[in-house]
Amino acid sequence: DHTFYLIGDAGYSPIGDQAIALKHLSETLETASKNSTTIFLGDNIYQKGLPKKDHKDRVQAEHNINAQIKAVANYKGRTYFIPGNHDWYANGLEGLERQEDYKDDALGKNTFQPEHGCPIEHEAISDDIELIIVDSKWYLTNWDNHPTMNDNCQIKTREAFFEEFESEIKKARGKTTIVAMHHPMFSNGPHGGKYSFNEHMKPVPILGTVKNILRKTTGVSPEDFQNKRYNEFRERIITIAQYNDRVIFTSGHEHNLQYLESDNLVQIVSGSGAKKTATRLGGGGLFSFGEYGFARLDVY
Image (cartoon, rainbow, N blue to C red; front, top):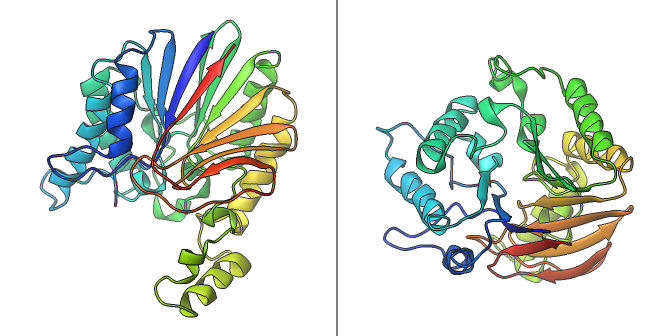
């Protein structure tokens, strides 16, 4: 019925070149059907989103964007870019709107979603498939640092966001419901508290283990499951998603490929567009691969 190509964290390509996963995606999309959708699942520009034109990092940032635009240049289907935490690091809303304008100018209006730094958007892909796009970093960020971030949004509180998400989930009952957001709800990677041997060696042995223990027990990083706000977000989203028995979460954030089933929900993690980290099975995980790549989801 429809095919989704999912790639996250594809926000770095060496100058004069294209990240290896983007090269493979580009080759695949050249023969892809127009009855398909490609979603870039956030962290579209490392390290700190799209800065102003006179910034020292602007050349590299534009190259990172253009490498992704090149991958969909001859593609017949529709393309969406959603924001990740690194995209927020360019002055929050200001950087997001710069990136939104850049992507829309290159690929057409409504390519960057949700618009204007708002938290949620939905798209009817077909009579039987609904796409709900969520800016998870909107929820997780410290709003005190971005006092004007909701000025152009109908949803201005976190509770109002949950109400809207619940409404969209319920309206989509009976349809295959794709929820695209940067941060995963389930993961067997570092952000989910699962660390490889190499992770314990960084930056040096013992210190690396201490670092990981602190991450896991204190929740100091807002990008980890153990963080209070991230955990609160996960619990509410997972609970609300139970109203619909055909929900598939699609996310990046972890720099690997994973397929998980938990709480009657499906999670696809596809975040190794430009970086890679180890992952493992367990905790509902049925597949994991710590290498570069992207995911393809066929809906029948």
